[in-house]
Image 1: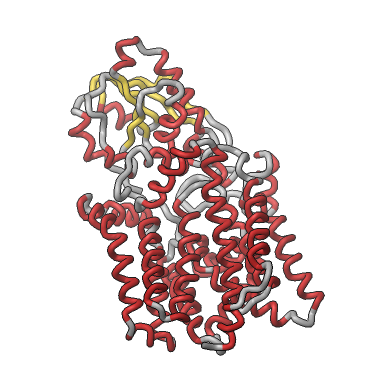
Image 2: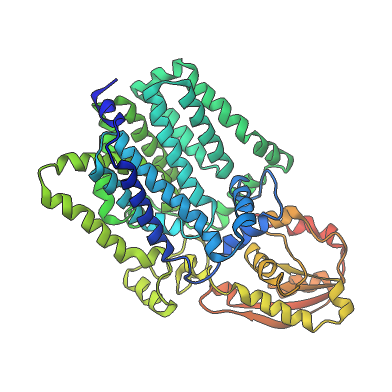
Length: 514
């Protein structure tokens, strides 16, 4: 056992309280954005997914939905209840990063600096501001990295087994955990840690992870691999090409530019790792995942976010040692990181009124930034998708009120995308609205209504396409919203009667995975 490991193995008195203080700071900052704006498009979709529990969905594995199902049954689905869950996941990441710094021999300064780098990261704050599988993804990657470090140090079968659990759960949450697994495997092969492959531990981890994700794979097979079709179509039809330079600059912007020296030094420290060669595998892991994302050509900068905890921890330990006799640097470094984090805070959390936010984003050069092939919104896509959703339910309610009592009993709603459909279903329940169906992503798998409707209220869609489906269809109003994505600001609402083809027959042609 190395001297570094001995030092790390001995906790300092009060370290637990220090970590709790850092966690509390993270939660306090995260809470600033919870009441801002409204439900995010994907949050409404995830809530609808909880009404269709399954081993898979077109655009995601099942874990995050199962977690949300349990959470909403205990705490409800208010904005505060919904967003407390990703905030807690973010707090868990802070605790793990601080713990990693301590594991690497760092003291409270290193623990605090590593945690501060997470707290001041716009991408971390933004991802953990609303519920999605991405908030859970970052936590599970951090847990897997921490467990992998322990397994390499202890060589204990038990630690490898737990690594398999975290990787398996990660795969059940988001398939990107396969990047972690592949990068870590490569790190083992090309570093002295390859000796671990001669022991049962790594293979046990692979077996456990495989067993955990097997039900989801079976679901994919049974449904003809819908996620692969979704990913392929999204890459070619939705995602914006990203150059290597843009991807690299995106790391600086998303992680907080002033943390760059910290994680760059951390990467070097991991790759060199003279005191403990086992850490080199994590440097290789980061480079492998970054290289994979660059090779894809359409990867968003935030896809690399889960790979940073090890780098931040290692960099913080290196800074602590380098600044041991440089008090000015010890104070200035966290102060500057915190100051930049505060400056970038509105880019991550909706803490400004919309008109002020537009001016802020424009001043930082972030206005109009798009990750998808869509007309830009003044607030940017992320914040625009937190607006306008109650208007869909209100407008549909007004249209339903125009129908006769008999027509209402045999009426359904059809929306072109999962955002509109989920908004009608979430906000419409209190209004007694009919169920809204869609052919977008998992809505298509859930299928059309069991009984053929006499009246269909259609949200959006091409007028000529709609006319070919019905004997009679008429645009009766529009859903008009502000601060939303341009394609959501003036959505026609039609009443269609007399389907020319049974909906069950038409349904396969309507499939839209993207």
